[in-house]
Image (tube, rainbow, N blue to C red):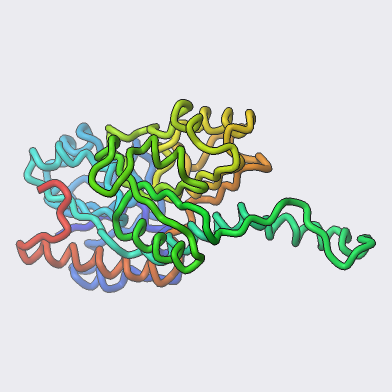
Length: 318
């Protein structure tokens, strides 16, 4: 059994070894690449029965060029990097890791929200620059401080992370409402997407990316938000029309945004959201806590073991 890991660096930069996976095979039959360019995927994966990927795309054309491939493991929850339909047609199961970063992503969501509300980094930089020493008063603030108690947090996505964010919001005394892109017109106790954006003080995205919801946060939807509202995204960058968000921020349609993800990663030079005072961008780091990466590694290895037993688990393209 030959196993190829296409982009193992982010999961294991040195503190989260692949040893338990390597021990499953004969010596030399597990090859770990830190990174793989799209044009090198077929060459590197040739002859492998198992390919493991995080963000390296496995397209239909790529799968057709790998006749020995029998199983794909995605070291993430989102699996849109793999053409799952093409894999299913070939009888190749694709497994993901359905839960590993719930707490760390929820925590990062609130780190972004609290930074929008308190601008801790701005004030710490101000003190470092000597502004407090020169201040005639014992205190000062460079932006309004926004209390969360009593505010409404709208959450798009009712999965594990969305639920965890809701529990943290409740601890801050916030009101929480959910909506779903799979039911954009609302259902039961859920408002429509438009209603959620219109009534919420803060909106946080926690939904999987699908062809139906790509760039669903567009200019008309942003226009429905309160001018004092914040938008937060720790899901997928492609959920937002980034040009529309930049324009909405520029025009004061909403007060601020924070995102850990962009539609293209790494971003291109001159990205419209990077460098704005009203938009915080972090480098897709919400998932990277060691506890989360260790859980991700463990489940990925269990996914491989289950396939080798002939009983694949966490299959997303059954």
